[in-house]
Structures are given as structure tokens and as C-alpha cells.
Length: 308
Image (cartoon, rainbow, N blue to C red; front, top):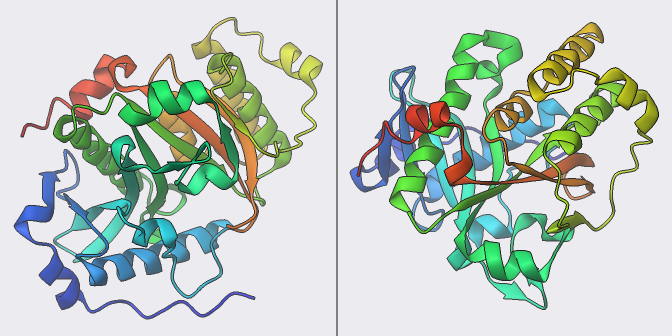
């Protein structure tokens, strides 16, 4: 049974922790600001982020069920850092990510100490060759009033603002060459739409080396033969058009974050899908890409617009 979510944190406390040294950049759109903070040093900000995450995830059909979404990965040493979009006009946190640099990830008995380790197995090649230069991303959220289904363009701005923040982090931490994250599909999302999306992702972003694999893969029951007959576009652009049309015809949209990752890099890898039994049984698909391979248009928009 879900616990009652905590009350909003006093805005004066929040603003007192939005100090100049935590300011990362101004966003490209919407007049918002990006901040980064350590949970141990900014407890009010962390509490409000935990509250907002739980609200957003519960509304979508997931969440922890606790009064506030703050877990061991937020509070471990070294902790995941928190990146947030702040709206100074309305004095609101609009969305966020948490992240940890590969050099700060502890590996014990072949398992990295990150939130996805209870869902995925990591190959020795990934741990040795890629993890040290990888930034792991998680807990992406946009507050409900700014989600695409509610306010359209304003919500797209918030997701775009988050990418501005991630772009800046790649400049601040030049040793980071790869991003590892996940996209979430919620139990109430239509299975046939989910299966088309997953088929498409595996077709265009395969992981033939099996760098990372689900411990217990989601049993989708995908009909490979039927999917092959559906996706006959012959290239990414045409098959994406088919995917988008088919999903919309069933009254759904491709989830915004899934859409954003698809359009980020032609060499992205899809690591398969696992059920997150610690987070409302949502379905999590691992994704991985090299920063150098991000499309030039996206680099110009989110990375080149930031300078130290």
C-alpha cells in the first residue's frame, strides 16, 4: 500500500540551497536554470526532488510507494549527484536526473554499485573497457504539470532543458566518453505498442557483443515474423514513421524519453529489458551510447552552447 507523499519543502529552504557554486548553466529555452547538487550537502533540495519524483512516477504507474523517493544510491558515499531544472519565475523544480561518474562507481564481485545492478548482468569487457569512462544516468522525471500530455511545448522545453544540463556535464567532465541509462515503460502502456517499440530499438540499436544483459529478461511474446512484415521501410527514418503511425493508431504516443534517445545517436546500443520489481514492476530497457557519436545537431544544441 502506498504511503502518503510528504508535503512540499519550504521554497525559502530550497532557494537557500540554490547557491552559485551549484549553478551549472542557463537553459537554451524557457528561461530556466540548471543546478547540480550533492544530496549530503543540500538536504532540502534532495527532499523536494524525492517528493517530486515519487509524485511523477506514481502518476505514470510506478514509484517506490514510499512517502518520498530517496534511496541508497542517492545517499551512498560517493553519492549520485542530482541535476535539476529550476524555474526562477515560478520558483519550481521542473524536472531532474541523477548521475554518477564511472570513476566513483564501486565494483564488488563483478557488480557495479548502481541502481540497475539488480536487473542487469555486466560483462567483464563492459566493466573494464567502458565503465570507468561512463556516466550512469537514472531517475529522470518531469513534474506532472509540465508533462507532454498536459502542456505540450512547455513539457518539451523541460526535457530539452535536462539535455542542456547533460550536455554541460560532458564538458565539465571531459573524461566521460559514454552515457549509460535506461528508458522506462509502465505497466499500463499497451503491450502491442511496447513490443513494436522494443522490436524497433533492437533492430536499429543492437548490442551484438552482449556487453550488458537482463538478469531476468521481460517475456514480451514478440512475434518476430509479424514485426518483420510490419517494419518494411528499409531504413531508420521510414521504419520510425511506421512505428509512430502504428503507436498513434492505437491511441498511444512513443514515450518522450524513448523518443529523445532514439534521435540522439546512430550507434546507440539497446541492452534488453528487465522488470524492476523494486519500482512498481515497471519495464526498464538499458541504453548506452558514445558522446562522440551524438548527432552533430544535438551536440550544437546541448553541448556547444555551454562553455566552462
